[in-house]
Image (cartoon, rainbow, N blue to C red; front, side, top):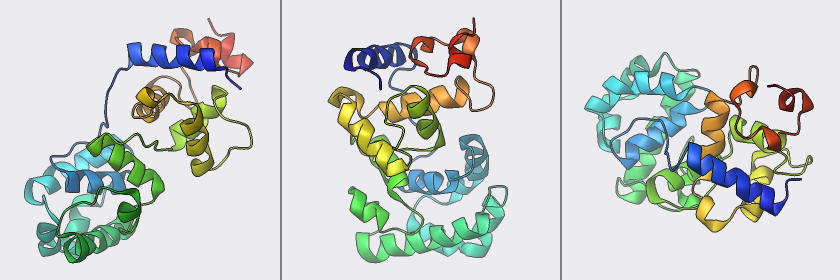
Amino acid sequence: MITKNEYKKLLTLFNEKIGAKKSELNYYNPYQFAIAVLLSAQSTDKQVNIATRALFEIVDNPKAMLELGEAELKKYIKSIGFFNMKAKHIIEMSETLIEKFGGHLPKTREELMSLSGIGRKSANVILNELYGTPTIGVDTHVMRLTHRLDLVPEDATTPEQIEMELDKITPEEYKPLISNFLVLYGRYECKAQHPKCETCYIKEFCKNKNYRKAK
């Protein structure tokens, strides 16, 4: 496991290189961000941004989404994986927002998770991005890098276990940032198949010898 001092150095490096960058999903208001997060499951942010560009020009609230309807919604998001299921979730989410939350996106994890298509990871991402809540979203990049960098025990294999372990060791000031640090580094540098080891600035923390020896 990484030591406290090593982790502090790693976080400092991430902060210097990545900084306080937020989600790469495009949106104009909280409702649209929740839709984008839902659509991003098993899809890339780039794919979602392309699909929502036209959609978000005409839909910016739950009422407008219901007026658009599920069949029309599918036409906008058909390029995204599992678009049929996601369209169903979006319509159900919009109905719940109107019926239970006055058309506004709630600000607690429990309430967000009561919305169709929003699980714990998505709720954490929404709270972090929109409200600055120090919640940690765990996606495939975070899962991969936490083990590659020895940040969590080997037996921490589920998103929730990894979230809890990161929450334990991460200083408060970095909790709103650690997820995006790992997501962005995993997306562009330390990729699953072809990590850019030659230009890696955190190589000293990597526990995979095949990566660490790369010059």
